[in-house]
Image 1 (cartoon, rainbow, N blue to C red):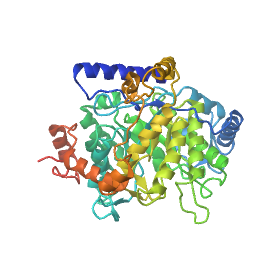
Image 2: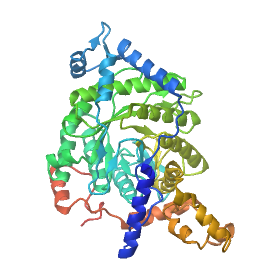
Image 3: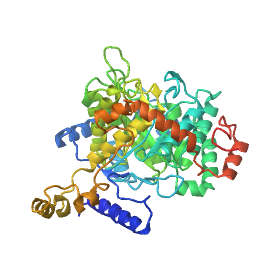
Image 4: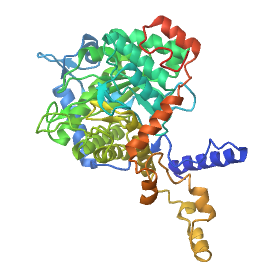
Length: 518
């Protein structure tokens, strides 16, 4: 039995037991967090070898500039060197050793049991993300500046969406008065908004102790957080091409020492800050990511480090980022494939449509990019839900629309299980000799939930039924669904006592009434 089939069987057994016990909340599932991907391979074995060799060659002969003293010290102590023009060179043996000995057992925890994200193998998960400065107002439909309340609302909406497994900070709280307030209020908003694993960035390494203090308080102790960290720090540690971002490198070190998982991210734009060719942009992204990955491993060999090459594409007519094209989709799938080649916990970026609303462009661009990254086996695909306008905007209703899309993508990644029960030769014979159709057959009834994904807001009615009910498009349906959730769902995983302690220790923008408390 394949691993995928074993998981399906486990879910079906759980569902049958639930129905016997009268608990309908536990049912067979057509999709689940961690469906196995990795079957789609845009690069041939020869091309993978060429990318890998070019990556090692760049790291050992060109290296990266602007390394902080801590990075220079750690890398040169392991055989690296600093050139006369200030470029830090990484010996290939060191790079290969850090890849070989890296942790592959990384689990991203939630604040409740049952929300664990297993980042091993080719298990696929979806997350939000984007850090947009604006949001589409749910009432007016117009773009406006995002606030901490919007970020909290996005988190609590995602808390209810089965196919968005991780909440990565999707908006910038523009009402924060300074960078420190931004980081602390971001950490609070996402932590209070969902019990799922959360990801944030940190604008200054000096802010890491306060972010850590907030997380330790929520977890109950520093030791409890270190054992089951529910927050990842995402770090864009380079300023492409091939230059370290000095404060970001210090953030990597501070986050790891405080017990956080870290995403090591390179996000150059092809044709602008990385080569215009897909292969060249990929090589630079992998090289830059591995440079940060090596440093993180030297800070702590036991660190939870996520390999996250996220090369982007520019529209060469304007120079602006373009997230919706086929070039972006294939580039990110290739980056995910390199993660699978190294067998590292891998994160990718997909779903950064150029569309401004949840329309046909939105759906086609997102589905293409997310599907390719998922089928290539990326462990965590961020920006997969809610984002639009090339990451300049977010829309709460888009999370709901995208949740349906992500469920369908997961079902396609799950693939075909061709065991004897699924092939169903005996069922075919039974039906052909009997009623002549499968609608009432026992297997059809037994498999309708375990084998089929059913969307929440995507419309499958006949045109006449749809017209009779108002002929509303999917965005309108999603807005209604979003309003219903925001009226009723105020997560309570953060206890009253913990919330009051956080308010005593930090200046929070969200009031008690904002989070549904007196």
